[in-house]
Every structure is written in structure tokens, then in C-alpha cells.
Image 1: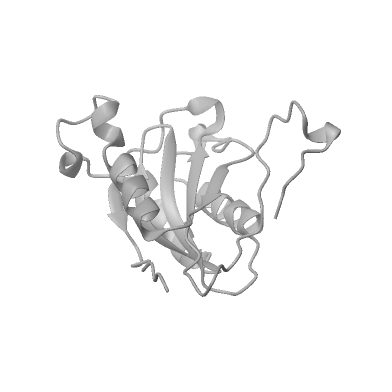
Image 2: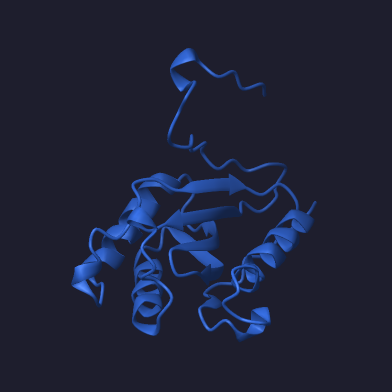
Length: 163
């Protein structure tokens, strides 16, 4: 499939969110990055991560796999639990749930309006992306070793199945 940008897409300030597609009976796994409003450093603490995990578990149209929560953004891998569930609607929903249950009301507004997503195509891509994300706290000089960062984890095991 060839994708052609339309003139109205030129200079776009927000990413295009293509629907997740099943390819040759492979798993659908999406790499997602979400930032806080004005890049406020409000996410990397126990209460915030608990609110995020609770929102992800409640908004269950998509499953959250591995994740890393940084001070002003988060990365996660997700897969649809419900066939055809729109990613954009799911992200809006869990962001809303997290905001409503947020432990520090003064942090509001909490989220940037949009997010970045990319559907993975291969199992090795998943492994490479996870390694990059897992090492993010080291690159930001927050810890010496990735395993020392307390705000990373996995809610569901997302398995890649190559045919």
C-alpha cells in the first residue's frame, strides 16, 4: 500500500494515527509515547505510576505490556484486546481516567493533546525498541543501570508470533 500525503498534511503539528492492522496472522503490537503537558516532570513517582497502572487496567480495550515511565513522558507497548478498538480513543480514555484519579491536582492539565505511535512489524523490532526504552533512564542520567529505575514494568505479556 502506498501512502500519499495530501497538501493539508504538509506542516502537520500532530502525528497521523493509522489504524492497527493485522499482517499475516502476526501479533499487533504498538509502541506508544505520551508526554505531559508542557513536559512537566510529574510522572516518575509511586503515586503517579499507580494511577497510570490503574487507568491502563480499567481501560481494557487494549492491553499494556512493558512500559517505562519517565518524569515528563512515558513509553509503552500495547496490543488490542478487542478487535478493531481504535487506539486514539483508548489513549484518550486512559488519559482521562488517570487525570481523574491523579494524586496531585495541581499537576493538571496533565497531558499533551496527542501522542506518538508506531505499529511494530517484527519480533526483533519489539526486542530492539524495548531495549532502547528500558535504557532511557540511563541516557537521561537518572540511574546508572536500567534495572535501577523503579518506574518500569510489565502489566501483560505481549507475545510476538512470527508465522
